[in-house]
Image 1: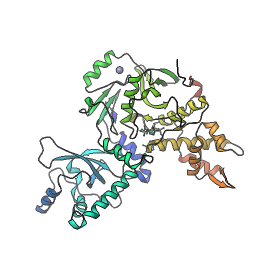
Image 2: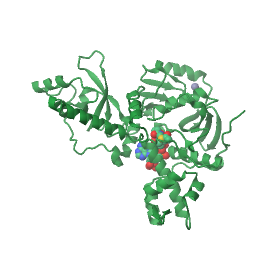
Image 3: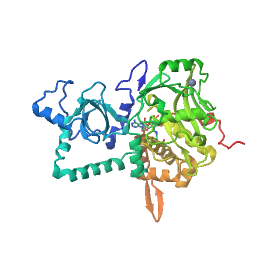
Image 4: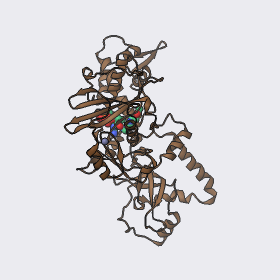
Length: 446
Ligand code: ACO
Ligand code: ZN
């Protein structure tokens, strides 16, 4: 990701944003035990006969092969080959490989060239193909696959079969980049665009109506006649340059569908594309004299049996880590307060979704506990914040602020401990000024 004027760089792209969670061990590239490999410019590898022979015996690599791959940080990381494709005008072994970095989220999956792979590291698997080891190899691979499938973060609530189906269907990113307003953005995941878009690596979006096109000239022609300068629907919040629009999926079906296609490029596990009638979309914009530019959004079911107050949330990559996510989350709870209901986000949460929610819950709850004199119950906290009691309990438990005494959960709030947790939970983000929210809860018309 990067602005079109300033092309994508390692510093401002969506990828480093991902690396920022490397503090969390689950995402850390394990440099331990993976020594840096020598790298030679393409075609300059000193080839011995033995090397050539081994290469020809393992190439092209099979889908499923595990090997080390040089990533953009210059280091080698374990990957699994997800797919391969022949290179145009290449020799019989000239393939590109679509790889999944097993220590990273799927959004970092990418096509790599053979030169990036350390073929020495394939050796272990190939050696195991010796006949009497075939069964154990199968076992090992099967087990490894099982581990992969059951531990993909953000998918804890999908069963293994649904997960396999999901991963098979969405295994290779279809659209690599999109252009949206001033930005060219690298995508993260597969999105099921209509088949006629399947041959496009890049799509051009109108930033206002979200129609998408295969060619830049089409977009330019569209922009000359598109008369929208902000999302369709009602502006329900304005504070400074920030505006929030409420879009009814039933009244603006095409907009809702376009938004879902766009959002799916950054959301791994959501399956809502056509059924937009049942949803309201809250689209956050930064406004200037050229119009209201979408920064992010969340969707919300018009009626939720499970008390979901948010279905999907997205901050577009160029705007991430600036506090908009926290703003959107806070906004969803302000709507719940106006409805007089408690709410919770739809599950599963993605890795980044979980981090953002945990941070929000921690800050909101601990701010209250700090100021409150005397006892306070989870029910009271829930009434004050519109956060569902289960989420409050889970948050306080994870911070070890709950004790179980005489058959009851008791909140133990030592001010010093609260301060420590609050500090760790980070900045508060952009504030929602409730006095600027003009909104009435959704009612079916007619
Ligand atoms: N690395 C480390 N921490 C992160 C990262 C990251 N890349 N992104 C967010 N966080 C954490 C941080 O604690 C951050 O606070 P801080 O910047 O003060 O440290 C906090 O989450 C939220 O930061 P914001 O700037 O308010 O959030 P942002 O605008 O980046 O949006 C969001 C967060 C919406 C989750 C964004 O990352 C996103 O759109 N991701 C892709 C889509 C997605 O995963 N959505 C959630 C799916 S779950 C669901 O929809 C119910
Ligand atoms: Zn348009």
